[in-house]
Image (cartoon, helix red, strand yellow):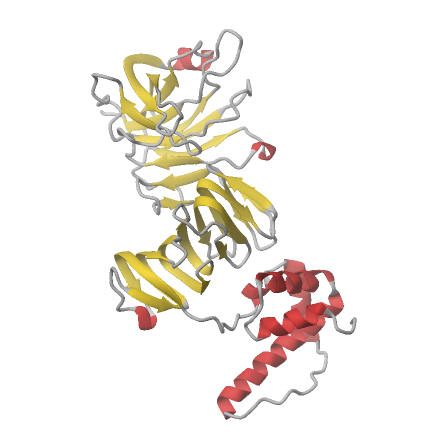
Length: 423
């Protein structure tokens, strides 16, 4: 070990509860890359813990004593290095950070454990942690960052710009401020670049991250995610695309679990490669109506055509938010698995020539809805035709590319919806 090694100072600050994010990253990297430091760190941490317990139980000042190497300590060090576990997950962090003042915006069927169990809407409370057993807690930090915590969840507040999610799901909104807000989980660190994202620390040790709007960065993975993308990060730091998100009409209503049993659309997939991004499809049960979002990565919404009512055939249908992009691939395919006999709808831009897969398997209904570009520099409405197919049994349906113009260029991405087929 090198004398005056800065990693030792970082390790000491860590055990004192005063480590910065850079200190934690330095110690984690040293444990993974330096076997000698790994062994020393394990012994140091166990010794520190033992001294703390002795001080608490005996109520006397702890005295440091040399600790001999032992096989089980070396095995623990090896396990940390091999598994690539984050240090703060593997070792309980001692917090010496002052509590953060939190404004309670809303509580929805919320059950809060511990001394904060009596908090109410509009309260301002000082918290260093939140143990939400069930329901939702809507909170605002001094940095103007808003959090929707969905129980069961356990959250630690480091300061107004930094929190740790030990388990459960949090939806973060930084649109009013708080750019650079950090949300850590046991396996990754999510840094806000702009606006809204969701994070779930799963029971299997992995973490799901999805971007609702804007952009985030995954610290240890050096990966950037943009609106409409979602990934799963494992304990070994592997990243994989999350293809399906189940959504609702509110920001916190999202899940990586399959849609409920009464939803007609069980899953969506495609033949896009991982190199083409981490886009997801969002299925919203009974979500098609005026104002429903069209794409996961654009703010466009559906609306009725001028002087017409929104088509009754589509109202409250299960809808898939597709994504706007990757449209130049001539051979892309989207696979829909329906859970029962359905009327399957494709909402296709009213431009260009329909492709064979559409004309041979679907029928124009004569109905029309519009896509409203609500945040375009010049707000415009784009007409979409409604195509329908009767699917008599549960199973897989393959859809192909969107319409093309005379030069073979795509004219826009389509939408997908389904309703239960009436007897």
